[in-house]
Image (spheres, rainbow, N blue to C red):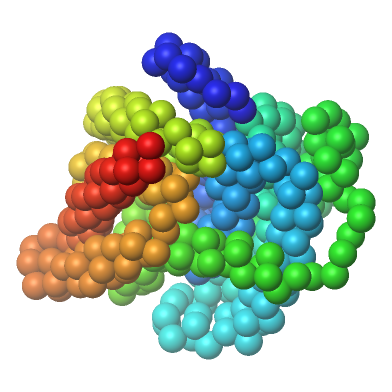
Amino acid sequence: MYETTTIRQKINLFITILLPILITQLSMYAMNFFDTIMSGNAGAEQLAGVAIGSSLWIPISTGINGVLIAISPMVAQLLGAKKEKDIPETVRQGIYLAIGLAIVVSVIGFFLINPILRIMDLEAEVSHVAKFYLITIGTGIIPLFIFNLLRCYIDALGQTRISMFIILLSLPLNILFNYMFIFGEFGAPALGGIGAGVASSLTYWLCNGIAVWVIWKVRPFRNQHIFRNWTLPSIRVWWEQLRIGVPIGFSMFFEVSFFSAVTLFMSEYNTYTIAAHQAALNFASFLYMIPLSIATTLTIVIGFEVGANRQNHARTYSFMGIITGVIIAFLAGFILYAFDEPVARLYNQNPEVISLTKNFIFFAIFYQFADAFGAPIQGILRGYKDVDVAFWMSLVSYWLIGLPSGWLLAQFTTLGPYGYWVGIIIGLSVGAVALVIRMLYLQRRLLQENQIQS
């Protein structure tokens, strides 16, 4: 990270940080992408089981990882304020916190998996796959959370190519593990959708091991001695991270669980509908990695500028990111419209599943526009450490507006399952509008405070 003075310099820095993050996010989601595709090719029941398991797992893991994301603006602002000596202890305490959260989630999951699946009244095979997918993926929860904490630290230093390298190295091995454990190749047992959980867990351990080695051996990380001088867990440092991270985590949880709740509501429809919904959502979410990467980049660059008290420069970066997100939205919409059938065939060859998937993809074209606009603004607010208001906005727009409207449309109109997707569009749109209002208010206030101080 370094200070910039001209628009051209800002664009160059923005792209330099963004591209590796984008490749990293796409590659990380590609793991889930291939889990879904390869499970679908093992059968519609396997795909539906992975869909239900993912709908329970992803909101929890995303929410906790949202808490850990707090390390990114914390490190970025310390870097901008030239307080590098405080970074190692902040990261070490973050590792303690990641392990503690992983243990809590594991214990709670152990007691709740069976009751939740029984309530859903799924077909026996789908319920079996979902249960053991969750159990197997849970064996990698501790390394997953530690890795995500370390990745946020690496990225906050501007070394985003390192994260990209780790994920690109791990992705082909994840595909290999999927092939082995889903289909029973190379002497491995044929576990169907459950094998996707085994593959993900193995990949989490691998990613974490590589990240630890890189931080221990490679400059500039090794100069900060992250894994030396361990102290006892500090409630004070934990509180600072939780104060920022919990609202981020809940905001991400509300958004992701919003989509997962839709999947759970879909359990009232047949297996083909569940499979088609999951296929369309999986690909649209794959495209969402682009605005999400823009958001992560904005958190880093804006956090750096805010730490250096360069409010005008932070504002310039924010508008740069929003414009980029809007351009990407049009490109993603074109991809979804032009390649709906090839995308549908990636997941399953059943003609009914393909037809249903194409219908869901049509609605995804519209909701990704709101997502591509709202995600960068969330990243901007995180860079300012302004996270509390975004938390309430997420709760209201997704759970009090989007999901109820989707349920009403699904139950009382001819839209049926597609009504839930209209609810997604409504919820995301309301959230995006609320976020942009908050961003403009915050930036205006900070600029006025700077003018008064000067």
